[in-house]
Length: 119
Image (cartoon, rainbow, N blue to C red):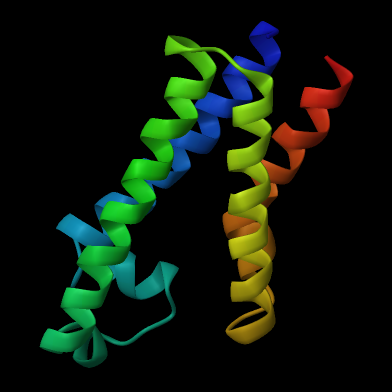
């Protein structure tokens, strides 16, 4: 696996760690409100907070798996599988919520997947 792929995969992982931070630790912050286009009142609801925290753990684990597939057990097949999964989830979010989600959540994964076939 090339260093370029590892760099881009690390960027994908960092993006998902940031999403985890927003959803799990800064659930009611201004940054979370801005990123997810939700007002503070909605973010302060107990049910929304619980859902966000659970979703944050999922995103953090995706980041860990990206790093494992890139560095601990480098394997292009598993890295590509995870990237396709991220892109599919982003496409679903784009289709059902906000079209921009495809590029916000999936853009870097799309670039990394493409680069994985070039390098």
